[in-house]
Length: 330
DNA sequence: ACCTGTCAAGTCTGG
DNA sequence: CCAGACTTGACAGGT
Image (tube, rainbow, N blue to C red; front, side, top):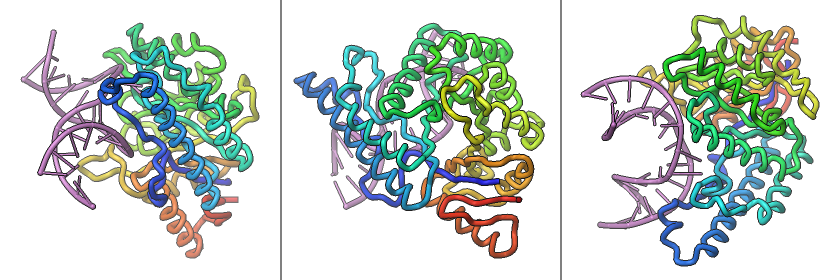
């Protein structure tokens, strides 16, 4: 089984390379010239995209093929007070430049709209904002010229005291989305509400791939073993409706911050539990991509690769392929 | 140069 | 019904 590792949004190694510089609404509102303010937001976005290109070049240097973009490229992009503003045309060349590099390098990229995007909501206004946010993310991928292998990962959302009803509402709202949005969505189990087994049922019903977060599963397992769910999770990645070739399943990996705060993310990733899981699924799984979600970002990935090199050198079930790829099992 | 409170957004819990 | 927690990088305003 080929395992490619990736990381999220930013680098702890590159200096002054934030991809998510922003401006608060309070300081925007203070500006005398609104048009000049909008140009300034667009300049910030260009800077964020430029820094993302630097990050992608850094990925190339590290052999990293799997990367998640920040959701904060364009400050205040979907803010109600700026609804008349469309930054997309002005930013098209900067997005295209990022997309061209992704395609040149054959990278797998994604977004993870944050927890304000909730398709299980009973509130009409929240659904409208969520849909707008998803459209915003998909539009950025389209401006990059990336096909439907570039996805947006979301959680099922809140339960509002009735998980079954929330799940049904999610499916109804999901079905109501534009195909161009729907076909890019992946669904992830979370650490509080919809666990892996529950997310899997919804993924299957929606026809959307499921991202398995093994840390979330460790703290919200519902009594299931992730290995037992794996064959079904794998099948959700066949994506017959997508206008793009199939992708390897994706896994999120992080480690508990402490016994006190088991849901928090630690600086680095403990190799043990991750390796155990990968060994357990290696038979019958040709390839997976593993997103490292640790506080130390790319440094955590490099440290994990060091740990895996040590396992390999000690005769463990790991073969190092390159700086961010290993082979496990046969 | 460095520190602290705040930030557009949603949901859950506890009072 | 409302305040605070959750979680996170970066701003904003202060020293």
